[in-house]
Length: 265
Image 1 (cartoon, rainbow, N blue to C red):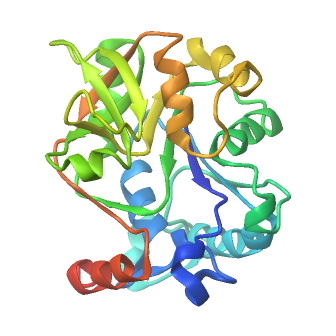
Image 2: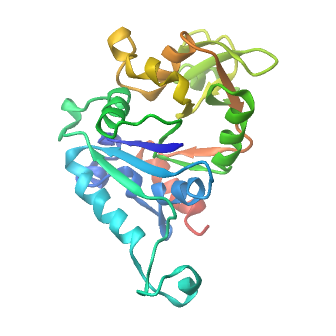
Image 3: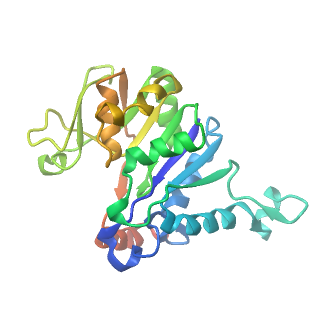
């Protein structure tokens, strides 16, 4: 299974902070937003590679970050994981950075097209865990992977959201008693359930042909939820109810709140 990190946006809502720097690599304490996520995903046995799809403006910054985290100088508390050359890797699985070639928010490909770009560029023909890189998570993706294996279908995540106002700004799914997805709407004015969908997905190898041809068959390009909506209408999907919460970093206020709340973790 490939872990594909969608990180090609320009985070314009964070202003000067991300004008020339990618949001996923902003620090929360001693770690980055992306680093916290990969610390968990890297431990999942099914994952054999991390693929970060980004834009041309930030590709070099991600590549430098990868070098830093895959060839760390030996430290006393890392001796057990270091090799004889006195260098060691923070992550067990290789990390590949894919540059989508765009340089401005106005010319961005959109999350769905970025995923398709990475799939084509690397000839991906494997199960995929697809994640947005701007959330702090308080559960392990291992639970999500186990759920998908149990169901044998492509899967989305979901969580109960009591606020109608918040449901109107996100994807909302209808589910049966077995957590099979019966329908999905993006930003519905009249939500049909309280099950909201965060930007984390598993697409199985058997469904990749649907993914590859999604845009040419009418799937929206911008938000990753557009693809989930398309897939729900074309194949069987299940939804895993998150076992704990998440913190979505979407603005300067939420970034500084994350530092205050979780920067000492």
